[in-house]
Length: 64
Image 1 (cartoon, one colour):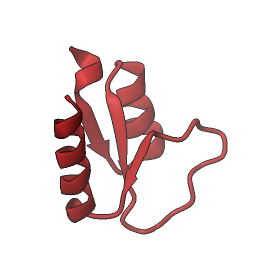
Image 2 (image 1 turned 30 degrees about the vertical axis):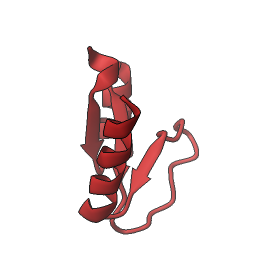
Image 3 (image 1 turned 90 degrees about the horizontal axis):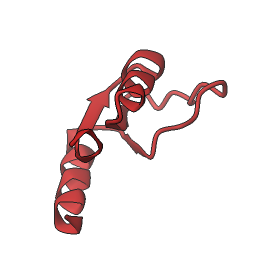
Image 4 (image 1 turned 135 degrees about the vertical axis):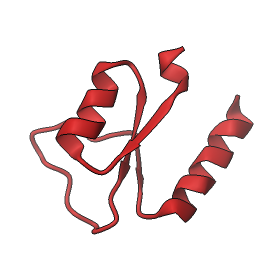
């Protein structure tokens, strides 16, 4: 199901909002520590690198 899929992207408007619009769980890959655009609803998850993403995926796998 769509709500069981995490979509990882680095563009707030295209990746995060696009994933949310499709019913996916958005994960913002924010390598540059940019501030979130105030006009958009923030994602549930933000990671800075693939190590954090791996930890997030391991956590979410254990919650299933």
